[in-house]
Length: 316
Image 1 (spheres, rainbow, N blue to C red):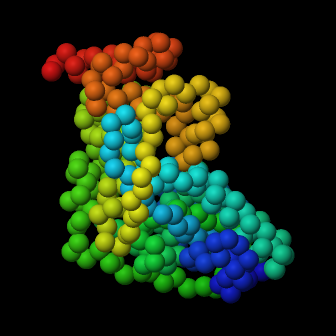
Image 2 (cartoon, rainbow, N blue to C red):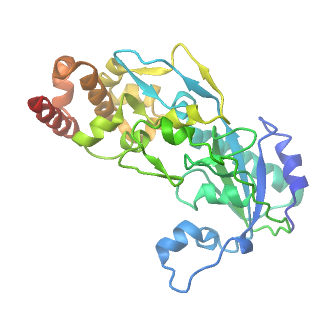
């Protein structure tokens, strides 16, 4: 069976939203397996590792609105993808609906859905699909939505004769994102994860003294480089932050009810409290944590993190 752009367009037209950008990638044109390739290489680069008989991928960009809330004491800032519903679930559901519509039109086929995990490098797939280019902030830059989108794709056994059309670089001499990053984490279209605030507040375990210094007051993710990109537009909102007291007082039940379905829910309760604790400390010192002594004592991660904060305070 052949996969064409027209049948994908017809299928997307039945969904909401009905105008997401998409492209088709013929697998044979992107896979050149080195003779010394190992399983790790296959996991990251070889579609056939994930789906036997993989022949083409349908790649989509699911846009979201960039939002910006002002800094407030007692609150932590969250990236725009945390402000909205968990994009993993949203985009997976959308791609599942697309697969159902395609099946209704061309018959059954084997496929597998990927959204930001356990698959190929999604930015590379989107570039191959002609949806944009890798920008200086290391994200995919699309002509219509800038960098405010999530990438998802359906790996299929369908054949396609579509041609690849790469998008020209539109960053040129602009380096606003690089200059905007407070920690200098962007260089050569790559991210230094030891300096990137989004990488730091999502890492496992305790945060080091250097991490704490670089983290700022971002509870989850960071949008500073995206705000700076002239291809993006963001909306200022009155209430787009997280109340840190609420986070410190979360139970397993209230976490599941209010936060687990957010994009940051995968971090788990302990890491969210760790982030809240560190930001409260940065705003008010150890005194700001006194009321949470019992909460901290119940978590080995928080106890260890508190000891690092005590060490920092002792040097002041």
